[in-house]
Length: 132
Ligand SMILES: Nc1ncnc2c1ncn2[C@@H]1O[C@H](COP(=O)(O)OP(=O)(O)OP(=O)(O)O)[C@@H](O)[C@H]1O
Picture 1 (tube, rainbow, N blue to C red):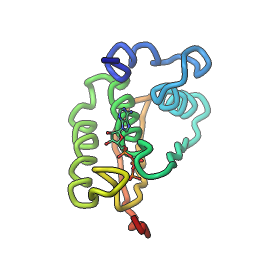
Picture 2 (cartoon, helix red, strand yellow):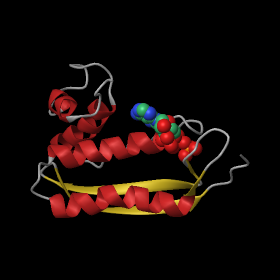
Picture 3 (cartoon, helix red, strand yellow):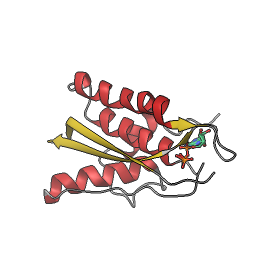
Picture 4 (cartoon, rainbow, N blue to C red):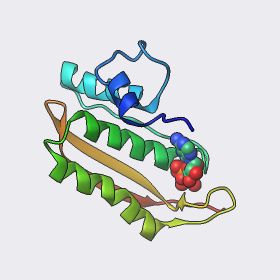
């Protein structure tokens, strides 16, 4: 079993330039955090793909990475942010032909960071027109 998203991977990608490591969700999340810090400009990660391609899981993994690189100092803030995803899924997901846990809504998540540490978040849900 590969451990692609554990602590070792967090340490491997943390603070490293995107070209230093093989492609990974953590590399992308790290690049967004680094650019935010260096250029003091908002960053956006757009996750798209067909149903079942892994958008929801990718989003959760990147959130987990961003929470992890901030350490435990804002645990009381990051924990509810991470726990919000499965809670919202319980209201808005359903089993389809393509995905046992298919989101029936689009998500827009805003994270607020200070010195590379998450200190807040907001999320909006949008109903999708899906035929499947
Ligand atoms: N990184 C991953 N590692 C292992 N399995 C994964 C990964 N990402 C997704 N999967 C598997 O694929 C399934 C579908 O992923 P996910 O729900 O994230 O897709 P989605 O693109 O959000 O789909 P939808 O548009 O239908 O909501 C997951 O339930 C999981 O079994």
